[in-house]
Image 1 (cartoon, helix red, strand yellow):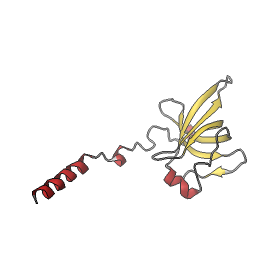
Image 2: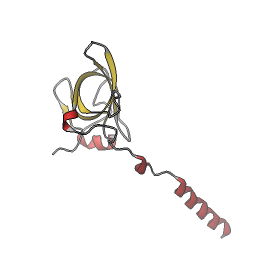
Image 3: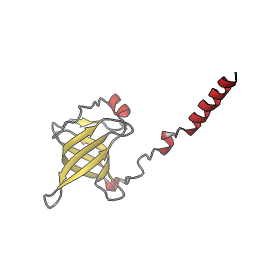
Image 4: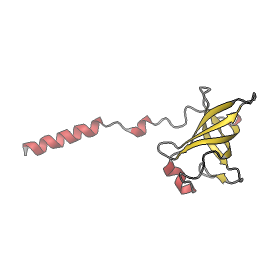
Length: 130
């Protein structure tokens, strides 16, 4: 009885010490959200990470001077994208795509992706349709 009670309290204490990942989620606070701040790029895919808590698209674009810049686009999780038809193979390495979204408030080469159009013209659904 004593060891069962001790095991119960040890398990309860362990559960209380596990951090709650949902409360640490930043959402989209790091990105601008005003419609006037939307940016559009035509870029070449370096990598696509279909994962939680955010899927990530790494891509390259040319700036005004013709220099290549590396950018990172955050999307929602793979569990939110999958019902919209996404898979890990939805975006292929070296594919040229159009990426639309909100830039990082910090000025970093990062954005919250709101729309992707593949080279064949097909639009990949990112969020809930209105």
